Amino acid sequence: MANGESNIRLILTPLLKLFIGVVVLLGIGTIVNALPMVKEIPATDLPLPVTEIVKIIMATLILVVLINFAFEFGDNLEEAVPTFPELGVISRWVVFLITVIVAFVSYNNVAQVFLGEQKWIYSLFFVAIALVPIINLLILFYRHVAQITDLIVSGTESMGQSRRRGRATPQTSVAGKCPHCGNAIVAGAKFCRSCGERVPEQAVSVRSHALDASNCSECGAPLSGNAKFCSGCGSRVAGEA
Image (tube, rainbow, N blue to C red; front, side, top):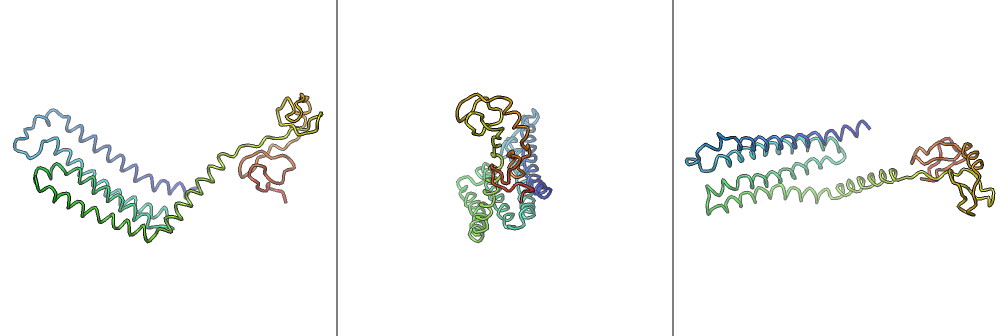
């Protein structure tokens, strides 16, 4: 359990750092652009409005946060999943690809101002950069497709087992036998479900006190006193040979 909590902490810590860093930088940029003195700065001698320059600065800082996140998150993934350390490398390339896209969008207006009709050079440059993480990701997926498949299957099976255990419902306990037809009576029943006759409360309560109220250690279903196997999951009852 401690190891699982440690792995979750390794994964969540860089994610929280990324979220907080991006939110803080976006907030700072919004506040700075809202200042009245910033709005009064003349932009006649500047190639871009002051507000646009502030956005570019904030975007650059966000890119730095993304790059730092890529390395930290990748290292933590390698430590959390030692059986498949390449997962950390894959995560780095994915974040690098996202960083390239963010950079392209952030500096698009600057390229338009300085390049004009030659802006296609800017687009071609970023296409070339984006191909680097894309090609590396394709190579990694091709080389480790078996490990990735095993990782997905094991994760799916683990989730399925957890859900099945969570959905395991306690089995109805038998509180006695119907004095009219002899069939089993469910605890708390007022009428027999086999013959429909009213069941004396004394017949139900006396038998219910004789039952063992212990539960199955595997699925939590209640066990009768003489049970050797759980009726909920089929596991052998602890202490029974």
